[in-house]
Length: 311
Ligand SMILES: [Zn+2]
Ligand SMILES: [Zn+2]
Image (cartoon, rainbow, N blue to C red; front, side, top):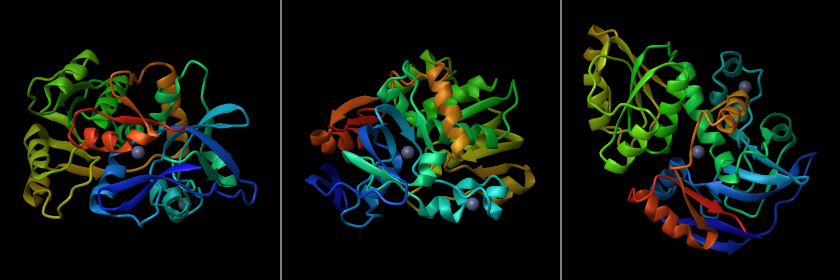
């Protein structure tokens, strides 16, 4: 089967690799398409994975003639992390994965996946919309963790696909959403989605979807005393940090949110089906053979997000 295979830093190739084997009541899913995630780009640019790895986890595929979306990690629901709803910190969650990865014609999913994280795509939801289930579920989890109340004034820093989805979910939870980004086209899309784009002070909550010293500074100067900063971003340098005394004297809450639970995935798909989350302006479509363009266009911010048709 065809797969996009990681070779070395900043290099992937389209190759023929063996179709994965079925074992222990799992199943083979035929992949229809897969979104290119910011985390795939980080792994690629920083060389965080082994040669031969197939990246991609925002999969829409076919199982027994039905279209499905799936989460790539499955929590155990039983450990101390799961019992405290930190599902993405669960050891089983971290171990489980789809094989070999979403940028391949076929993937193997385990029985655990089938029972918990594989969902039928409603007819009214397109493949591309469905591929946003996992990133939307990440955003949904972040919004829930931050404890948004109706009327909260929330600043979303960074209006890539995550920021633009985050803002839509925040609005659904009743927040007044302001977005900021350096790219004019993204601000236009944000306005079209009903976000404000004027500068804001005294935000009750700030969501960081882009990580750098600059975005940390924006968060600190925009959040009100006693407010919350939610971090949904990785950074390249450990020299990016939060100022201790601002957090202490101003009683700020700084919290992270990482990966979704199975119920977040199901809810996110439902919000997409109901058009509460709209993704139609967020993607560009590429064939497998165009993967390098997809990667470069994403890195250079020419596009917001790439969806790779797998065929
Ligand atoms: Zn992702
Ligand atoms: Zn667990």
